[in-house]
Length: 129
Image (cartoon, rainbow, N blue to C red):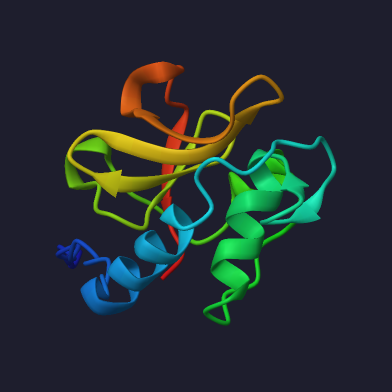
């Protein structure tokens, strides 16, 4: 006699810490207007996109890899429909701040800025906190 078992797959819920995420966003926004420096590691003197996210999250004890391609695998995948402030947008590396906006070290012409979420193609969304 053959036996059959049907396993129910539970959808994993992704924890979201609104308090810390809002603190991360507010901290990141303090650096708007500061310069973009490729390979830079200073939120005040200059950093690039992945350096920006790495340095912002390090302030909260979350240690990310240095490069944008490596950050694309940090944390957990989140669907764009479930995006929340504090999530990392993988287009280069940017921080979602809510209301369809990002804060990020964009380029050497404008530095650290707030832009639309859709300024670049979105490759993935990652939640690290």
